[in-house]
Length: 325
Length: 303
Image (cartoon, rainbow over all chains, first blue to last red; front, side, top):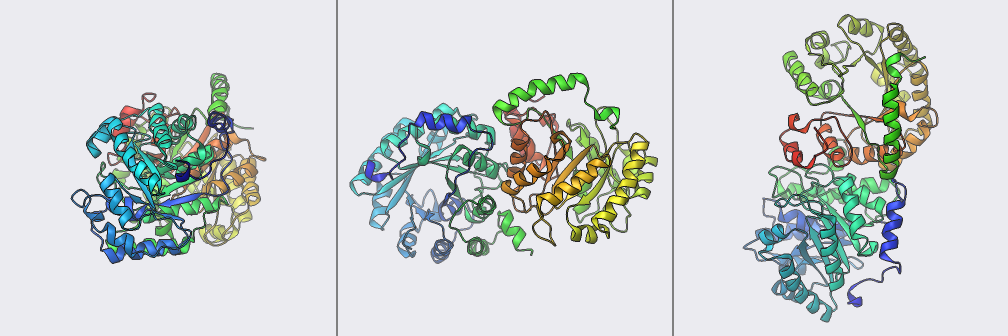
């Protein structure tokens, strides 16, 4: 289990959370933020237009050249459910794997995991939820049953020395259950962490969260899981993503998921926006003097490329603003 | 000396004191006044000219949402801002609800006199922290603009009409680029000194980020009481809500923070504030593309 996780700072989880909560409201921001680029997977899988394999490969290569250190490449899911990800093996085999960059892939079950490993995956991600109803509708089982499925993947990953990242959906609200208690999010996150996930991304799946709710949720989770193992994944459905992300940074989180061009609509809100745009996130972090390693200009080029391929306008405000200059 | 309405009533001060303790624990103010600028700042930047009756209906509907300040129009020459050509008709046509204020922009003395004749009871003047922007926007230097505004604000105070001041380019200028917090402070101090009861600090081109917002506010707050400050953030680079959150945090020891938002931001601002900050917005009556309809059930603190 320790092999699958990076070494974590030795500090008591409870004390860390107390410090973060009692710090002034502005908080001390991290000096570096790791951006996990989910555009090629989470972004594209929610886009209506199917993108060809060469275009996906080129997008990921452009993102690699933009300096991102983690790029979620594809999902080893049945094309029956997610047609956009039907070419997962070709994409993973076709991309250039730059040194120092991770290319995790989603593996919803053991079959997907084995296919991912055969295709060369070195890191995988599993997708849970803090809502029973969402879990039932999404993967047709209860939260407890999902843990059993994931346990099989984690055990297999441990044997193969493959890192596993966990996602907890509905961390700030559920399209079916509504409000989700921070305690429930903490419980699911703790379970993932104890099973061996090196990092857990807490997702505001339908973008209903606000900074206050984000703060309450993180305060609860930080009591159970080390801060360094946490990430946030904010959707911009209600325009709250960047403000929620800022709150998470103030709480001490230093890993943020985002999607180039803000790709990916919301399957639960017709016409609504999707992920936080990586360009807008990088703009804010640069303005705050926080190191990301990302070249904004190259990122903008990657965003422009994929939007042309999708025949859609970018959802990134930075991209919209800079293209007019 | 400020007019009677500018001094908070004793009861309000007591409530502010009580809220202050709570806000220090949460790091955010308990109450935020939203200044709705959609009918003026919003519409004047829209290409399609909106008919007068639509503007009036729009403002009347906004009045029913619980907003306490709605910037109605601008008494500027129609040659420069065609959208605002019907300023007098709009001012006279709206229903002025009790407890709601309806400020108008008055760039000069002539505009001020027309505004008063049309029934305006509050006015605004628009300065900038950038010489180039001031020159291009109102064809004079900052110093010359202060002279003009002083005439307007003096006349307003003489008639017991409150005046609000705007400082554009507070976080950056389209011509000069970076603007120093010191310059913003200097211009804000001038406007405050001449009698503006409140200064709205505008990120006119939306280039600001939470870091530059914090630095600017910390500088301005050395010269102007925080209670007389507001922020006006543009979302050009998607930073507006994060910048506003930062401003709220910087002001968290205050009783009340006045926040300006534009037409596209008001819906997301209300959702942002809903979970922890009492707002006067009535969600059930606020219909912006149906986006807020699902927020109703989450906002038990709101009427």
